[in-house]
Amino acid sequence: MINNYIPLILFSFAITSMIAQENSISSGGNATGTSGTSSFSVGQIFYMTTQNANGSLSEGVQQAFEIETLSNNDFGLTKLEAVAYPNPTINKLNLYLGDIEIKDANYDIQDIHGRLIINKVVDGKLNIVDMESFSSGTYILTVKKDNYPLKTFKIIKK
Image (cartoon, rainbow, N blue to C red; front, top):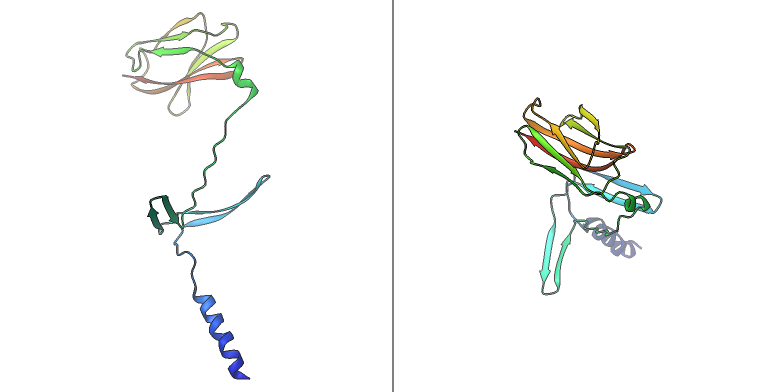
């Protein structure tokens, strides 16, 4: 009777010693949404790459690619030809707005920390922004219409 259990014991040891993928990860988990569930790992450092004439396979590394077209019905309403020059600037910045209705349009400038520096109403297609009193650094200029951001520029003040 014991001879009948020896293959079963050897088989169970063989199953438990098999490792499909070896990895050391720092974190991971499962993400669940309305479209399904996905498991993920962060910090995986060990993997093996096998290559041949047809391509390559990286075992142990998840390589998911999703290509989707970003679409929204509101995108058709936000066509804006806007140019901010010269950038970097020293004193004056020219903000040219080509294809926007001037009514209810404004622009604001924030510093790199998000503090509001200027908020002005657009007064024509060409707006001259006086930046002479600004400290040297990086600023964010956002053009808005009806308080909806249309275009954002990174402005460098020398």
